[in-house]
Length: 591
Image 1: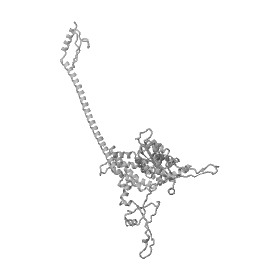
Image 2: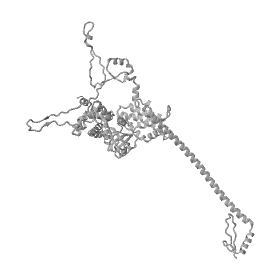
Image 3: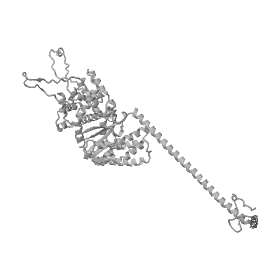
Image 4: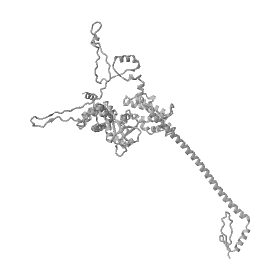
């Protein structure tokens, strides 16, 4: 029976056995196995031991190397994880601290806006930002604010206090106001002297008081007699109807002018105006007043178009935008915001203020409004104006007041009583505005020379301070945001020094927005886009009239009486505010 070899062992150490006749074949008979065993027993023990020890050493070295490598990798991984965790914790702590600081700043700023004064006054800027407060401090008491009544007692008091440079002196009443004389004469019996002679008039004392006549509403009846031949040989004749601003309306030019004035100048909502009319016994539905205001704006549209032509003749245009809510704007929710865009400019001596309604705040709006115009455009930092600038021909200026205002906000959130970097920035702006105020009434060339000699060094110092502050202030704080804003728009903030007629800020446009914002607080929203557009037209014309020195009601009445008679463009141009003489308007009102 043949002898079968055992299966190969899986022992880790296995000596090399020599097989007779072959290095790979195994013995198949018992005799071969016995011969193989005798041969192996005859080999020296040292060879077997050396082989085993070498194999063990090799395997030990490999295992040690493997374990060392694993331990090193584990330690490296542990150290990396520890450092990553520490860095993440550090950054999270910094971010949390910044977020907490930001929230605290926003809370302080919100509380300041709600409860504190909103003035941006700075001690170094004189009357630039605290004009009202300074004028109030310069007066002594409430009666000093009254107008002069012209009495001798008042003159005697003013003579005694002449050393206080006018304190206590009331301003005289405007001489152009009509006077109604009330004579308080001495009775005849008291004009008989004790000597028996009658007293003679040697003078008089005159005092004046302002008087208001409440709104008087009347009905204008236009009567047109009709004439006919007694024999019936000719058709009857009658005078033609006088053209009016709204032919099918029973509102006169004076009533329409008052309607636009109370709504767009005085900020009185139409429902309150209806109550004013009701006190005089006239009931007019608010819807009728609203339709009339919209229809009148359509009549005034040609003046708005001509005013835009004048605006585009200016070398500098100020632009800004503010929100307005329109309830029935197509494809928009009633609670969404639309925008009123304001532009101010015009040739010298012809200031123009225009409002334009648009549901969008995109850059296409200013591109449309000033398409084809070339000049300097003054705005805030809103990027929507960049599309108009990229169209070519426009040099972009950025408002310095907006940059300063961000440092004012940063100052408000810093620790009370502590002086910081925000105060330093505000002082730099104060120096720049002091130069502008000093040369406000100078010629353009004198202002340019002053900016080159005095403003540029201040700007250079401000730039150096800005570069240092940017490296030391966290970017997500209010101060960091102010620094980033100033740095981002620096090149356009300093461009006003290139010429003497360029403005340093956009306050002119912001001042034009204020009347609209005051009115918006009262009437809150527009019902339709047509109503918003009508408001834009009327606001444009009344604010332009005010800028040209007109009283809005008298100018509107003058225009609404004559605009229906205009036949040519020249006739309409004659009604633009800078072409109408104030004396002519006053005479028309008194007639």
